[in-house]
Amino acid sequence: IETDAAFRWFLGIPFSKPVPHYSTFSQNYIRRFQGTDVFEQIFINIVNQAIEKKLVGGNEFFTDSTHIKANANKKKFKVEVTTKIKKRKLDLEKEINEERNKKGKKPFEYKEEQVVKKQKINTTDPDSGYYHRDHKEEGFMYLDHRT
Image (cartoon, rainbow, N blue to C red; front, side, top):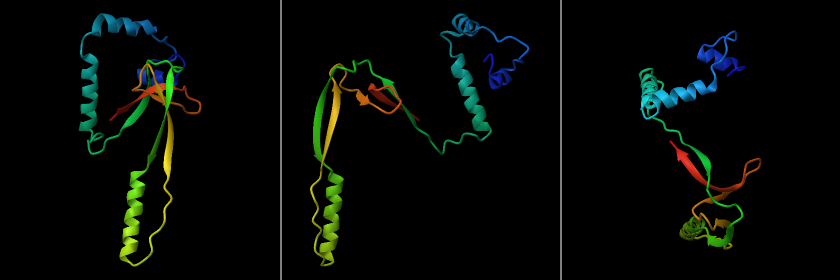
């Protein structure tokens, strides 16, 4: 906040005045607001203002998700290999051949494809999933969605 002009403008603190110490806010919360619903009331008030100004209509919903680190050791896992045939693909192939048969055409011959998937299952927390992406921390995580 000390050097960020946008924050200072939003908070109404000119560069000529010092920024309050961070503990001012935390101590104020501990002494005055802890155990109250003041922040919930502020949030509700802001949402109501947005509804009044027609900024929020409720006709559209947006969902976001994030990965939450599981309390699980990265090195304690077993690898499970699963093999499955894609049922949807088989159903479509069957439907196509039925249509071709009705029109007197010879059916296509499809190759049976199996999908082989190797999955790391954590021995400490088997409900978590293994997450890995470039430039991100990898490990066992949960996926949390918010709407």
